[in-house]
Length: 117
Image: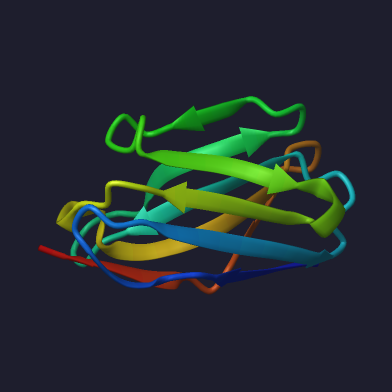
């Protein structure tokens, strides 16, 4: 099993910044994709950003140029730096980890991000 613990959510005004962290522990060997997803009230969970072992990244169009995903392998932690936040970024943000070889996917408990206008 893999445990993912998110932190860093909160309330911020539009235009502000937050940094989310996701620390992984447990059977993390072979985890090769880490990502952030979000779910707003009444909406489906959507991809925000992913980072693949080797460092390649991918972002949702809605956050390109504003959000940056990065990883610290020594700490088994992935970060999501969110700048120029908008009210539409308000959601619960979930950390995800995938081991593609056996198609296992793990989720954190989620952290609330609220952007006020």
